[in-house]
Amino acid sequence: MKQRSLAAEQFGASAHAYLSSSVHAQGTDLPRLTELSRRLDRPAALDLGCGAGHAGFAMAQGGARVTAYDLSAEMLAVVEGEVQRRGIHGMQTRQGPAEHLPFADTTFDLVATRFSAHHWLDVSAAMLEVRRVLRADGTLVVIDAIAPESPLLDTLLQTVEILRDASHVRDYRVSEWAALLQAAGFAAPESDTWTLPMEFATWVARMRTPELRVNAIRDVLARATEEARRHFRMQTDGSFNLDVAWMQTQPRTQV
Image (cartoon, rainbow, N blue to C red; front, side, top):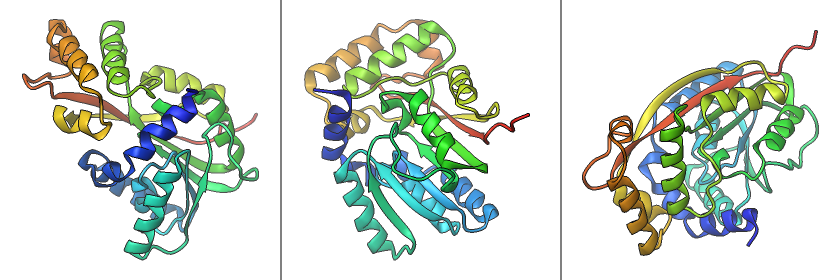
């Protein structure tokens, strides 16, 4: 199965779980998106790889006119239902991959992507598309799980991520994101980082991870080095802390 089909299948089956997931439905980054939208004064905004729509709902709360865009039709159906339930006006959905955006040049004032890019087939191509559809004075915000700069810790994280979810591609390092963004024509991003506690049982249940793979994850974590156990704050039940970053940038000024 091709990567995009696998991702759509994985997340289509888990769409409602992501709507109710505390990891996705909560966080200080959501009010921050609301405030950013409010400061931009009713921006045309794109929630790229919207999942269950939490970033889009936050931007809409700040007055943004939001387009929620995702590969999964099931996720978009969840978003549409929640838009109706919440009585949100001016929020629409479109379906497709991040690497091919069906929008005209300079359509958006604000593009945000939240906990999605680590599933994309080609982040470089997606960022070029974002640069194309974003206005010259627009703002891009990337919120995602990130890998530590240490190769040891990076390798362990990618291992447990792909065991948990076969559609996982990569949690990029902040340094990798900076290079990807600048190569696509953006200024060096301003970054803030924090950690999210991942409760093991709900983390694997959300993706319906098969028991064989759950056991493999437990074995990888049980054999982790002292450095990894300390960094990820691993617990005896398999729970751990995941590094997350907010990376904000604008199109680079041509000189």
